[in-house]
Structures are given as C-alpha cells and as structure tokens.
Length: 64
Image (cartoon, rainbow, N blue to C red):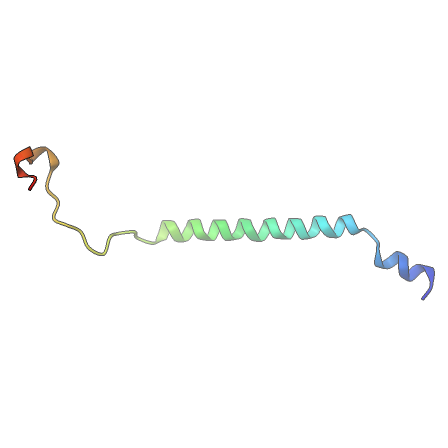
C-alpha cells in the first residue's frame, strides 16, 4: 500500500454524500409523482352507500 491508495479511497467524500442525497431526493420525487398519478386514476367510490335523502326535506321529528 502506498500513499496514493490512501488518497484515492478518501477522495471527494463530500461529493459522494451529495450524490447519495441527490439520488435519494430523485427517487422520493418519482415516488411522490407515481402516488399522485395513481390517486388521480383510481376511482374512490365507496363500496356501499345509504340511500341519499336531502337533509332539507327531513323534519326534526323524523330523527328516531
């Protein structure tokens, strides 16, 4: 092992951290975009629903 091996191993440690942070943010951004697209494309209709009656037509005496 000579002095050049030690230099190569520790060359640009800050650059490696920035690249890792950039890749993490890129993957996270892609994931957020995919989740948003899925939310737009998927229909969120309820599986069941009660018959809808307009609340304005109901009287207070109807609540039993």
